[in-house]
Image 1 (tube, rainbow, N blue to C red):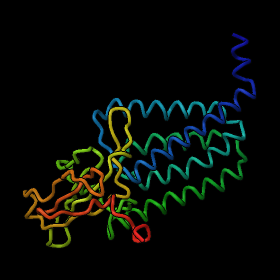
Image 2 (image 1 turned 90 degrees about the horizontal axis):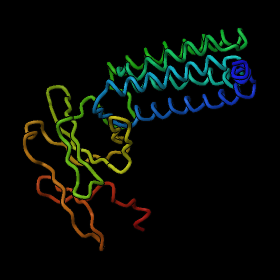
Image 3 (image 1 turned 90 degrees about the vertical axis):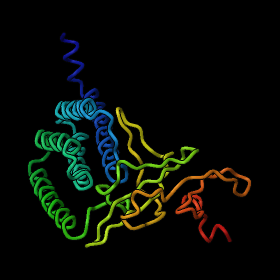
Length: 259
């Protein structure tokens, strides 16, 4: 038992654990990225949330365990910036936001950093969170949701998804309202860069290509379809809109490449 205690107290072991904790910071960056540019479809949210809680609180235990290490002290100053990004782009998805926020607070106050430095950074981070959340709410009320995807994911029609025959592309639609006018917009997404997660999938939306916009009254009509055709000697997925052939927006070459 004494050997185990001595091993756990070994400074190099603790430093190694402190370095490993940066993996948690990287994990949060990855989750924030998924919130920025992906649409999450969860098959069974409860077990996934339990797993997510376990990862967060295991990381919190390790951060507290190595709280005296300078490596961890620096990490506790980085995590709030990542959590702030997570709050902005994952706003409303509290099951994603709250666990890292709890870890952030506990790790920040437990770390044996310089008290003056901790007070200064703590005040700055608090201001960042207050201003960031207030700005998000204001922008969301008067302009629209903050997103890097060029679409409002809250308006995505979850009942509609048309995958091409090759499985490389899908057409999705968004229901939009502008005053008294209602429209439906169709976008093409690539499926090859979707991210599979335990008990779910994150569908890549960032970089999606607009295909067609129509009046809301045509919602029940089958406006779009996929066809597989040979183009330049290659089999390609080609979209048709109201019976008219369109170029696959993902395969259209920029002008400088055509020249």
